[in-house]
Length: 362
Image: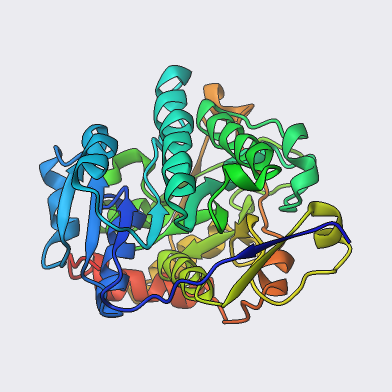
């Protein structure tokens, strides 16, 4: 068996130092809060801290220091702080930004620098990939490494995420050029608190809630594809609390005395040994739900009857629109993650009742 063993021992406790990039953003700020709840306060927050609207995401959160994204690598080298784990959740996530050079700089080159930093200092790394890498889904939604080179994302954001995934897999071939453990998590449709600042890029739940408050109804795109009724376009919606729980679970698991990584052949053939295997992992619920289901859940959380109006989809996005996404979650389950995810109904209810309706942050 062609197996690469990585001897690695690092016990995480509340005195451990953790880097969180994208820390003032949606998922990053939720990660910071979750770490605080677990007792971790020695956090280095990395992001652009120039948007006043985002500041509320970090209100009452505890951390060591904030570092501007562009200054981080010089700063960490100068300060020489011992870091125990990195959650690299920062990225340019705007799928309507078509200037690829922006995605190349922030999503590829910056991620390469973070990978190299973790490699040089032997720090485990969890980073945010995306289900946008799967494009129109012609090759399915299986997180097998064997299909990564064949994927054809539909927009520059998805392309940049897939380019870094490919780069990571190529560097993984040489044990000297990778962190002691790494996981690229292919986030599916994430929703939840702390996305107030995201404007048009916020989740459909966020926009549905605001439309209901303003007009008493929600507008959804008509289907322009045979086989899909209006509102029956399907997505794998995952609550942000599940996302950060998986991230934390992976960090906890790196405390094993010996982590083992396998090549793709042995992973696919089921010969996955105990301990973690580095690589790409889907992160959805594994259950596709319709936009109609989502909107009905939003109305239900407000104790209202659904009122949905269908409108034409803009022509400029019709050829780039995904009608179906559903994560194959077998790989994450195979390394031991068996905790249940929020159902769409329970996740939306928690989000609407405890955050949106109260203007609260997580």
